[in-house]
Image (cartoon, one colour):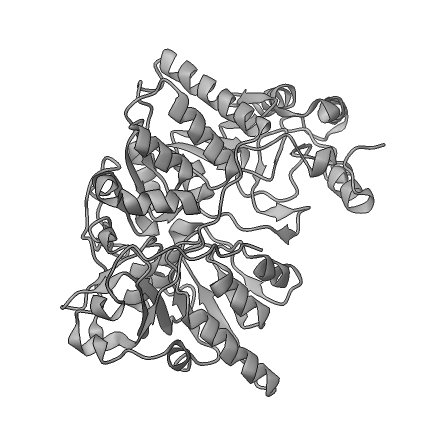
Length: 519
C-alpha cells in the first residue's frame, strides 16, 4: 500500500483560517466529522484529487469512521465515489477498508480498492479521463449530490485557489448540489496564478473550438468559480499530498529510454519531427521517469510538454532548461522533488500551467498540437493491440487513465514495457492480449528493453514479425514465431491469422502453472 511520507513543514507561514477571505465562508468552518455528517448514504460524491495530489485529507477519513459506525449498527451506508484519478490511502484506502463505496470511477490505484473491485464487492467504471467531465454534464452518470474539494484558499468574492491538482474540480463544483471545502495550509500559497481554468466549454450542439494552439496558451482564469451559497462546510487541514518516492531507473528502463531517444533522433533526421520535437506527453511511473531522464541528457533543446501529470522527470527537465514549458492537470512528485518545487515555485510558475483534465486530455487539443504520447502497458500482442488495465484478462490493475485520450489522437503513439514480468514467468508480448484497451489502430510504436518496433504503415503479419523480432524476450521469441507460423497455416483467414484454441493459452498456462512457457 502507498504510504504517506512524514509531513514536511507547510510552505506558508499563515494559518488555514487566514486563507479564507470570504466572511460568509468563515462562518461555515466546522470539524471534518461535522462535515462528513452532511453526506448521506447513497450520495454520489465528487472528490478532488488526481494521481495523489490535491485530494481532501480529513473529510474522507471522517466519513469512513461514520460509515464504519453505521455498519457496526447494522445500517447500510455506501456512496458513489467520483474523483479526477487516483488519490491516496486517506481517501480511497480509508473508504474501501470500511466497504463504504458502492461505485468507483474513473481511475484508482489503491490496493484495498483494487481488492474490493476484483472480489466483486465494489463496482468500478474504468473511463477515459477526458470523458468524465462531459459525461457528468450530459447526465450519463446520474446525479452528483456533494463535491468535496481541497483548495489553497478562498478569495473575498468566493473564488477558490486550486491546489496541486485540478482534475474534475470545475465540473464537481458546477454540477454538485452542495460543496464541502478543505482549506489545506500545507499547500503552498504561491500556487496562486499557476492554474488555467477554462469556462468556455458548451454542450452539443453549441460547442465552439477551444482557442489553444500551444502548451503555454492561457485560455481561462487562475481560479475556480464557486457560489458561496453552495458551500455547506469548510474544514481546515494541514496535511501533505501523497508524495511517493520513485525507484531509480533500472537497466531495462534505461534501455527502453535509449531506444526511444534513438528513434526520436531518427525522426528528426528524416524530417518528420522538428529539432525541438513536438509537445511531450508522458504517463506516470519509473519507466516514464527514465525516458524523461534520457531526454534530459539528450541533445534536444527547447522541448515542451502537454500532459496530464507533471512528475519528477519533467521537473528535472524544467530545472535544466531542456523543457521550456509544461502544461498538466496535476503534480505527482517525490518528497525531494516537492521540496524543490516549493522552494523554487516563483521561478517555476511562469513555465507551468495546471488545467482541468477535460482540457489537459482533450482530443481536439492533442490532435491539433501533435503530441508525442509515451505510455506504459501491461501486455501487447504480436499485432500491436495493447492491454494497459487487466491482469490475465479479468483482474483490474489500475485503469486506462488518460492513455487512450492521447494514444488515439497523438502524432506519435508510443507504448513501452519490459519484455517480461514476474522474473520471466510472464511474457509481456503474447499471441493475443487478454484484454484490449488500445487497438492496433492506435498503437504506432512498441518498445521494450529488447528493442523498438515501428509499426507505422505495416500490415498485420508484418507488424507481428517486427514485434516478435524487436520486442519479445529471447526466452519467448521462438514460441511466438512458431505460433505465427502455425496460425498462418491453419487460421480461417490470413489477414490477422490466429489459432482460436491457442490464442489465450499462454495466459491459461500461467493461471494453472505460474509460468507462460510450455515447460
